Length: 362
Ligand code: DAH
Image 1 (tube, rainbow, N blue to C red):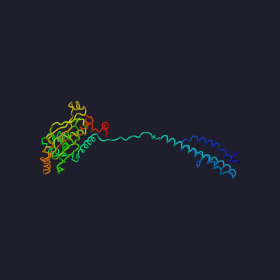
Image 2: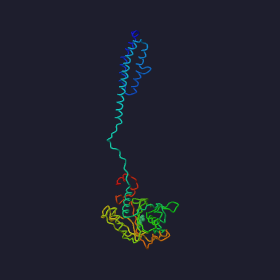
Image 3: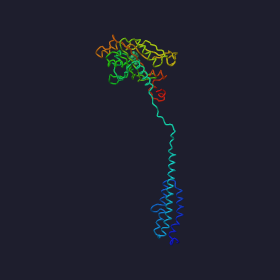
Image 4: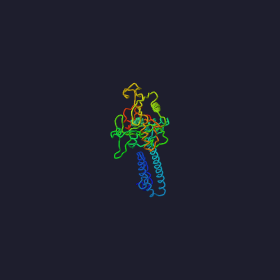
C-alpha cells in the first residue's frame, strides 16, 4: 500500500473524512450530553478517532512525524474550538429557553390576603362602651360567667320560687350549686360587694350571658350590657335623661324615646325604654309589629332590697337605702345590632359565615 513508504500521507488522508464526520456529528448535537458524546468520539483519551491518529504518529520517522503532527494538531485545535463554540451556543440557547419558561410577570397584581375585621357585635359593644365612657362611666367586666344563685337571683330580690330560677331557663352546672349567669345584673352585686367605699357607683358591665333558649331571636349564649349608677339623690329623672342621651348617641337624635312602666324584681319603679322604629321611622311595619316602637332596654330605680342584700353580705351598712339611691338598666347587644343592621335572625351573628360577616364595616 502506498501508505507504507509515505505513512504520513496515510494519516493525513484520513483527515477530510474525519472532518466531515465531525461536522455531521456536531450538527446533530442538541444538548450538553450530546456534545460530550461527540467530544469523546473524536478526542476520547483511549479511542477517540483523532486520538488514535495521534497514536499512529509514533511509528513515523522524524520528518514525517512533524509534518503529520502539524496537520493533526491543526485539526485538533479546530475540533476543540468548534466544540467550545457549540457549547457556548447551547448554553445560551438553554438559558434563553429557561428564562422564557420561568418568566415572571412582575406587572401582575399581587394576591391580597383576606382582610379581617371586627365582628359586628364587637363593634356595637365598643360603640356602647365609648358612649358611656364619655359620660364618665367605668367599664366593669371582670365578674364571672359561672356564678351562683346568690349573685344571679337572691341578691337581686328574686325569691326562691321565681320563674327565672327554673331549670327550664337556667343552665346549672351538674353536681354543683354553680350556674351560668342568665344576665349581667350579677355585675351590680359583684361590683358593690368589691367596692364598698364610698357608696358611689357609675359602671357599665358588658358580658356574655346564658339561657336555655334557641330560636330566631334567642341564642343560648348572648351578650348584655348592664348599667348601675348609685349615689346620693339619684332620681328617675337621671335615669330617663341618661337613657335618652345614650340612645340618641347610639342611633341618632331623630328617633324618639319613650318609657313604659314595667316590672323587674330588682328595681322599683321599673321602666322599659322604647325607641321609635328605626326601620319604618314610626309609621308601623313588620319589624315593630305595626306599633312604630321597638323595645330596647329594661331599667328602673334600684330596689332597696338589693342594697340590703349587699349590706348583709358585707356585714355592715355601706349602701344605706336612706342615704343613697340608684338606677340600673340592661340591654342586649345582639338586639341593638339586629335593629341597627336590619338583621332578623340572631343566629347569623354566631354562624361564622364570612358572607354575612363581610357585609359590615370593620
Ligand atoms: N336583667 C334584665 C334582663 O336580663 C335586664 C334588666 C332590666 C337589667 C332592668 C336591669 C334592670 O338592671 O334594671 O332582661
